[in-house]
Every structure is written in C-alpha cells, then in structure tokens.
Image (cartoon, rainbow, N blue to C red; front, side, top):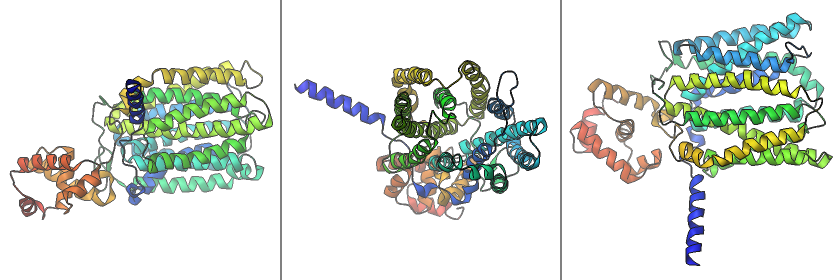
Length: 484
C-alpha cells in the first residue's frame, strides 16, 4: 500500500514538473519605448486579413484564396535569403508597396487587373510579415510576444463575431477601414524602424545589438518548428470546414477566440504555467471541438464551434510564441531563415496538397477532418516525452534578461562596453550582476529581479570580484561608478 502511494505521488510530481514555468512573465516587462516594435507583426497580420478578393478565379485548379497563400509564402521565402542589413529597408519598402497596391485595389473595378494587383499586395504583405517576425523573434521579450499575439487574436475575435456577420462591416474592411488600417500600419512600421540605428546589422538605438551569430545548437528550434508544421496541418482542417456557413458558427468560433486570450493571460501570467500546458489544451480543445461538430445539430454546431475556436486560437498564440522564443534562444539568423523556408513549405506545398485533395469533395467532410486531426494529435501525444525533454525540460525560451527591462537596458549596454573595452571576460549573468550592483541593488533583490536564488547571486558575485581583482562592493563603486 505504501509503495503504491509513493508511486502515485511520484507520478503526480512528474506531471506537475511538466508544467513548471521557467519564464518571467509580467506586464511590467513590456517596454513602452518598443511599443511600435511590439505592434508591427500584429498589424501586418491584421492588414493581410482585411482585404479579400471578391471573385473566385481558378488557376491551375487552385482557387483565389489558395493562390493567396502561395504569394504570402513567396514573401517569406525571399526574406529567408536576405542579409540581415536588408531586413529593415525591406520592411519599409514592402510596407509602402502594400499601401500603394491597396489604394488601387479600393478603386479598380473587379477583373483580371485587380486580381493581379491583389496577388502583388499579398506578396508584399508576406514580406512585411516576415520582416516583422524577425523583430518579433530577436527584439521582443516573452511577455511582449504574448501581448502581440493577444492583439492579433482580439482582432480575429472581432472579425468572426461582428465583421463576418454584418455586411456593412465587411464592406468597410474592403474600403475606408482598409485604408485607415493601412495608414496605421505605415505609422507603426516607420516608428518601429526609428528605434534602430543604421549600420551593417539590426541594432537598437540604445546600442544593444541583436544576438544573431550563434549556431543554434541546443535551442530546440527544430522541434518547435516541427510542432509548428503539425499546428499548420490542423489549421488546414480549420480552413477546410470553416468557410461553410452550415459547418461552423462564426459567432461561436469568434467567442472562443476572444476567450482564449483571457485564458492565456491567466495561465501564463497569473498562474505561471509553461507553454506546454497551452499546447496540450490546444490539442484537446481542437479534437473535442471537431468531435462535437460531427453531430450536425444546432446545439452541436454552436458548442463545437466555440470549443474549436478556443483550441484554434490557443494553438496560434502559443506556436508563434514558442517559435519566436526558441529562435531568439538559438541566437542564430540561420535558424530564422530555416523557419522562413519551413513557412514557405507550409503555405505553398502543404496548402497545395490539402487544397488539391479537398477539391474532390463537394461539401466539407467533417469526418475526414476529425480523422486527420486525431492522427496528428495522437502523434503529438506519442512523442510527448521526447518533446518534453527537448523543449520544456531545457531553458529553451529567452527567459528574463536585463537588456529586456527598460529601466536597465542603457546601464547594461554600458556594462557590455566596459567588458569589451577592458577585456574582463564576464559571462552574461556576471554582466547582469555587475550592472545591478552598481545600481545599488542588494543581492537579495538581485535574486528577485532575475528570478534566481540568493546563493546563485552570491556565486556570480564572487566570480565577478575575482575577475576584477577586488574584495568588496566599495572597491567596485570606486572603480566603475563614474563610468556608469
């Protein structure tokens, strides 16, 4: 009996350990001076969703919305080959071309000319989104990424609950609302670009350079991008059944999307759970929602759509959050380029295969969608121990760093300069301890700020003093206080 209890407790401890977070997520870590950087990716996604081509034109057996994905994919593919110094110029150029093409789209009559211009708009929008995602990965911290994804999903919630249901809203999106959104996007893009200094690479004006020269080893990027491919295939099922008014309730789906934002805030920020928790919720809600939708009754359609919308939104938020966190953790531009290439494969090849096969069905086949999602979810659960080991047991996200906190970003840049100039060979953590000590922060408060133990702070402090050849905090102040 005792052994069984101990075994049960052991399993409970293992399960609890799956969901312990390693991230410091707090609203106070949102940097106001980087608000335009936070918004540039969300606004690029929203802008791309606003404008749809009103008529169906089939090319090579593919409909308009399928060709649209191909053009988006080419935008991401182009950025995968672009040198880092070209990313900000490409962001501004593609934003301007998007604005010009959208202006013509509003006034041109329907026809082949407008269709070609619409495809050019989608290509530019894909390039904009890819450039914005680079900043989303390498500049923002964890809570800023979550905030950006929340902005996107709040828009989608509004789109499904109001925009699609009310014709006047939909018409506005294709005319004056689209123009206003384009103007907002241009302001965000050029304000965002203003945060960076000119040079060979992308560097903040505060002096902080982006870490993009790493080799990416041990970052878990390949695994998290693999999860991204699984998520995209499940999204293809969503696109497959969603657009039939008899298949899914747009209002219920949108309500689920809105609720998902609140769930993420509670789970990540207030409860401190890690990303795996939300990933599993995405799998469970998506499968459950599709299962309920198999029963083609009004109650089943409403409840299934709500659950499915909840799962779909949770998946979109958390997969972008995880991919960006792992790419930043890799400190590798090569890993970002690999992500762009995989994005191209998803939107060009996987979308093409799914679309080609679905053309054999006159109506959305919910049983087929449920079967495909069941297989994908089962594979995720089968490989969960490996996913847990490679992604969530390791500190795979960018965590909490002093450079990401507005009040310490400038002092930390000066610390980096001192370290480089005097060849002190301080580790990144020792540089953080150095900065905080010179700010007059007591060791216990340093531990609270960096979310590490007092013993860890003391260990780094001893190593710091040894490298500097000093014995006390007074000597540290005497030597470096003026330089800060």
